[in-house]
Image 1 (cartoon, one colour):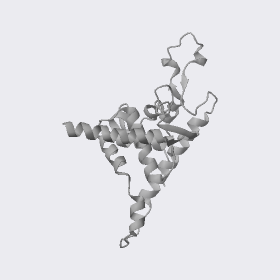
Image 2 (cartoon, rainbow, N blue to C red; image 1 turned 90 degrees about the horizontal axis):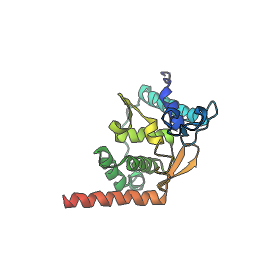
Image 3 (cartoon, one colour; image 1 turned 120 degrees about the vertical axis):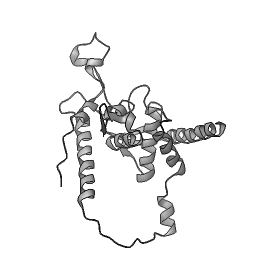
Length: 204
């Protein structure tokens, strides 16, 4: 199995606002900068370590899936009830299409990413999974500058904390360190997006 590469860009997620960009110049340099959700000023930061470890596990799982030989067997049709239980919410599928078409805002794309993960896994999602899913939906918006093949964790984490975040809007709730769930308000907002764009499409 290939060794997971180091990812220094993940450590940048320590900051929602880096110290060098903090407009509060009246503060001492050591006190400038706004921390991202789940991060501390301690070294090492547990929030950063959690993201790095999550990324390593995701890369290891991906490499194992690619390298492991897949047995060839005749497909077994699943019972009807099992097929229905795994069927994705049609609104979630519609919202993914809207996100990929660039018709949603950054916060709306993050909501769609969280909802699609919850729809698939029937549970909360961790920050790194949210970063990767948002990047998969809108790679142009959520990739590192000049490195489109790598997701930019800062683009997502910046919208998970602060006054204009998806958490502040009530769409997501922090369930644990770097773990989020979609709230009832978030699901209402997502369904509202489907209705809004369906109406716009009908008008066109």
